[in-house]
Length: 141
Image (cartoon, rainbow, N blue to C red; front, side):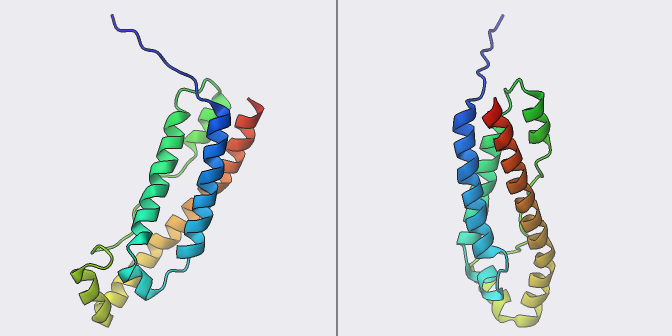
């Protein structure tokens, strides 16, 4: 028979991670909330920063998985699943440059991606709100 050791989350550390995550979300939204056509096709940092945000959120939620507090677990369940942006080519690649300079096709794809961008921004604002609520809960524990 295997023995499983479950360690409870360390709430003060999680609270600090939530602060860092909120700062990262603010930085992302300041840089990319209204992304220009040129930024969409050529800025590779957008995808990297978004992937880092998703990984930070996942790590924070995974660290809460062993919590015995139903309030914490209920709040963690409310976090949205962050979708990836609609981008047919990696930013800055040859394909992206072709579509960026071939304006009609590039413009249509950019307009389609605006729907994804709006949802991502809305979800990130929701994550930030949930982070603040979760931080208040963890500070009481």
